[in-house]
Amino acid sequence: MTVEAARRVAATVSAAEAGRRLDLWLAAQLPELSRTRVKALIDEGRVHVDGAQRKASHRLRAGERVRALVPPPPSDEMAAESIPLRVVFEDAHVLVVDKPAGMVTHPGAGQSTGTLAAAALAHAPEISAVGGPRRPGIVHRLDKGTSGLIVLAKTRMAYDALTAQLSRRTMSRRYLCLVHGVVKRDEGVIDAPIARDSRSRVRMAVARPGTGKRAVTRFRVLERLGGITYLECRLETGRTHQIRVHLASLGHSLVGDVTYGRRKTGDTIPGELVEGLGGVALHAAGLAFIHPASGERIELSSPLPNRIEAILSHLRDGGR
Image (cartoon, rainbow, N blue to C red; front, side, top):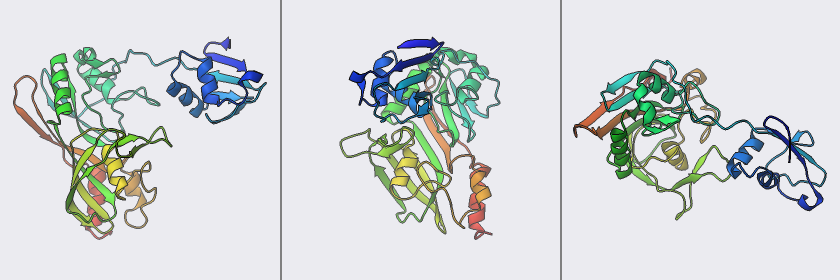
């Protein structure tokens, strides 16, 4: 492998290497990178074979020239950003914020700035020493398109105590959401394991029995409004996209969820109201935990935001 320029690499496929998958071949050329990172480079269009983008499964031929652009790894340092936060509760140990839809919880693939973590770091610089360097103080996360309550720890003691409550399932998290279709049962429990979707690196899926991580969601119907159901959900576990995946597995995807559900709502909800969601119709409305210092039970709530309330009002008015 020859280095052409900073972080630009190129090599020619030998006769002995012909027939190998592009991702496996490239991983062998770049042993310092994980297989996941190599595949991401290919999916992001940073790898070309004879000048053309190819899939990770592309079978290489002898003499083909492979070029890759390898960006530097993300820095462990995260800059504080002075972004306004809606603080619901704060003391010397704990910070609870009402996150708007559209804000990413912490830096990740495709988003390095404008995050809740960066805003919290500016608001409370002491959290820089709590948790991971790119997730300062973050005890749990909310998806970008989800709004509502999220708790951060301001001290190491508080972080350990709150993450332990999550692990023991003693932290209560209540969500409100709108889903497609009529949920027939008034209440129920979805106990189905969740794993990464083998067909997509950005999706999760209900896994086969005996695989994945256990995930439990309790739901209760609040209202049935034509072809839309208003639900309350409570998490017993906290898997990635858990509510979205579980409800979609029952045929009731969240309104606004193009990853797991419908791209169109037909005549039920005007397009401008769906666009106004700025994400999915999911809101973390309630949060309860034992305060790590005082031992008191803290119970907090967040009102349903207008982005979801507007859809509810439309449906309650009979779609007028």
